[in-house]
Length: 596
Ligand code: GLU
Image 1 (tube, rainbow, N blue to C red):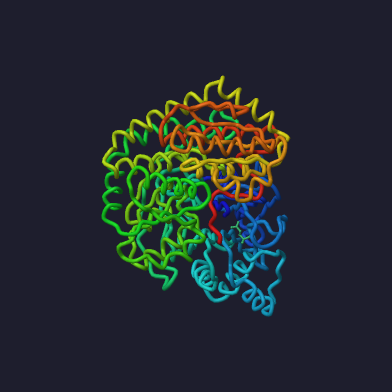
Image 2: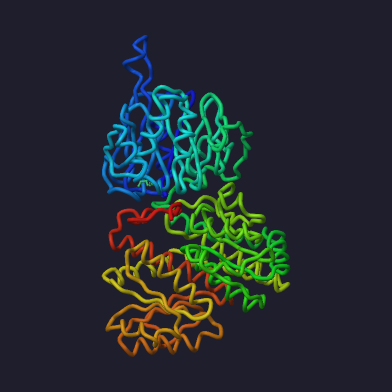
């Protein structure tokens, strides 16, 4: 969970290029950051000037500028701390004893204590509390007998855990990148090469990329060379042309990516309605042929998956199992070669999804992924895939990726039921309704509600059926974006305990679509209202029990889409009301979780 960016090439402003790359990757981790460049050799004083210059800071990059010498090679990192506090010393790049080798790292070196003890015995001096620092010292050891790329390979092979490492040395004109688990992608420009944790970092420079696979080392110098981590043998790099547009990953006129990405949703949904017929037919066929279907996902995607179980049950009459990624390993005994596993993930890199998928693959299961990032680990591991097609998502909180997932699941369940056209029409209606929610009048209403709730510390959200995962997603958004303690419940569960938490004035959002859940959820709303709660109803049908009402169109199952969009907007404006510094980067979080 960090952003790595490296540059080697014809331009002299490596530091500036790296800084801009890190700014694009900052959603991956933002507690501290740093850059190291190799000082250019001048004249014939080679010995004196051949050194690494490092600049490190605590906090977000924001509008930072760098003050580093001109150079054509360097590496940078934006951190999400796992081992060691958030300090300048612990920020990456980390150096060896000589200060000649710099390393940036994503992951956890699980055996770092043992390696550190050994290195300390051999006289190495450590200056940080990180697990990462063993890596430059290990490389230093190996450079005593080996060339730099080989030394990195040997050092990397000593590490256990899921890691990505990028290293440079002032005695080399190369950047070496190795990975096992965490993502790395190399970009190929005109006389220049890039390495980054995510293609978004590179898109400003080139669309030609090589996704580094587990067990590979990329050596970036005048050209890219790939070798095997195992035996050092040469491998052929597979060059891929990205289909994302650079402009899609930029902020434009919006204040935050969070808001920009909310506004992109009507187009995303329309695109799915218009162009996903063939892909969903193929998936439907796979689902029909399988015995045993499992959704696996984390965070917001897990609520899309949970919604999928309701959609498949009611629309397609299919039973689908669901587990969150980090729990799936404990529930996968039923998987065999007839099973279909459907992982759902924005990044395609979440370790909690990748791990169970790999286990399921080993048991012979077929993997059909729903994901956003082309070329990601999940993309490469899956036998079949549907891309979300929502473009890069840069705010840490998921918005358009979640509605894309839900839209695809709605279309898929209608396709399975041989009613694809009905699913498409429903999505067209949802896109139209979302567009209406983004009108000035509707936004002003949400802003006003956010003002009223700005002093709220605890909030409850309830729903039944499909509105239950909708409620869970709404609470996650409120928690992560606006730091409001929000709890989501199935309406029927309230009386089994949570109702004890309701007191006078506690806001309770009630998702009430016009379906079989309506009467029961309105009764649940009345129960909490009787205990003093302030009821905010969201759906197509107003009711006297609602103190406030946010209206949606009646879109059958797709009503959950405008309901979700309301909760996104409320979370965003509540974050602003509560003075959250940057709603794109909530505290303690990172977008894709690449450590266990
Ligand atoms: N484990 C390393 C640290 O805590 C790397 C964390 C990251 O991936 O950002 O510094």
